[in-house]
Image (cartoon, rainbow, N blue to C red; front, side, top):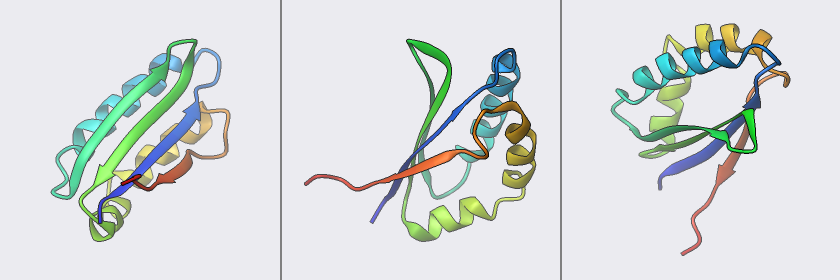
Length: 97
């Protein structure tokens, strides 16, 4: 079964551009992962410091491989001081079929 999630975080005031640059660079790498099907990055229209990332992986194994990718740790380490939350807030989604 596909692994689908929404990752959310809010850039600190003045850090929006740096957060956008970091997530764009990270997205390029994630999209190259064999098991990644979707990695779409959005900002909320009414609150442009709010970032939402919609992610879909082939299955749980693909998601676990994503978590172990060598560029994930450095990305998160660079991101954390730039956002209001302690880390990205993850919401796992199940399809309604």
